[in-house]
Length: 497
Image (cartoon, rainbow, N blue to C red; front, side, top):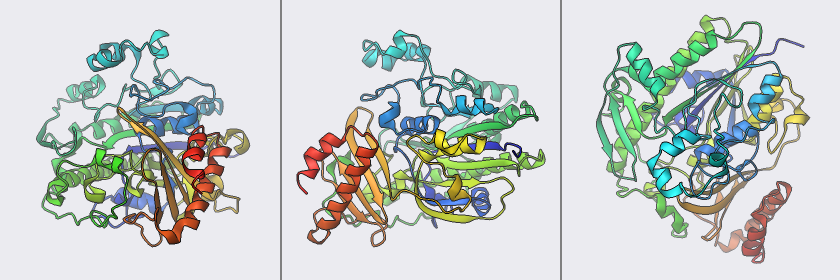
């Protein structure tokens, strides 16, 4: 057996895939990731298991859809079954450790807030304190260390990560301050954007790369390692350093192709996520900050890849880059954030995999899911493919460009966000996309003819045969994956067919 490769998984938060040249032509500058794409397998049609942070991240650690691992929405939100990631023997970390891997983790966790943090949070105590969650009752906190990783535990969502003591200690040790000026907010909920005026070294992103290098330097050269680096950005708050914001502040951002022009038959639930003022000139400054934040993260990833090359371990390291889900940024007349709607900008994700000694690129058109990452990582670590494929499939044969049987459909699920519980299933087959919106109008799109999803074909007479086919495909998927929503779907939709 050849020497086991190191595996570096870089995960951003809420990054649209069309910020990368491999996927789109936005003015967002990502030269490092563009170059990595030239050396990687690029998955053109990768989808998140769920367009919400905690469920998508739990999928990576378990290989399961949210309906099976129990984190249906963000921790300690209404409608969530599991608040702290259960410490199962089948977690990615435990299986990697069994393969002889050293394990490292830093950055956003969001798979638990911890008992102490729950008890200290006045908001959670006020509204949820009497609910007696089992995790709280039994004093169980999900931390990276608890499940086998070496590194950092940043409990909860983090909201950019700026308030954690580890980051504050980093600043103090280096005589740095972290200064944010020119904050804009208020157009949608609590979304914020601002300028970091204290320099790149004072940013949370710079800290995370320095922390990653520190942890990697402590690993033994005799055993392989798996390291997961998790940026909080470009998820809001869109705080970007002056050096990168200067690249965008004087540039006009072209309106999205789907900023206007929607058909009238769109789900009304989408209004929940619409900006207070969807005027493009009002949205544009937020997008400029988002692009600047994305470019800054790209720069920081470049620093880490340079470190791997300097250490002579770049070629023997499998590098996976992805995001937990996408971002809307004003699409379809001012939609913000994610969840509640299943558009490509929020459900499809960037996915690059650079193999060992790989310096050429090819694109994969097959439909893949973030559920597939678990089995992929474990097969690379030495596990037998058949023993680690849970809800997902290993991507190894697609990376190797080997002939293989592959799925015809891919599904993204959602159960709501915040205090809104709303069941959805999106299924794609070929270029056709169907969204089951329980309690609202469904959606049907032909991505070949309408890639920006402006026209909902759900009530067009000439597409009723295709609609029936997509409903049957979703029913088959639900049956094969033990999706409990199948009973409601059959009652509400299949009786109509």
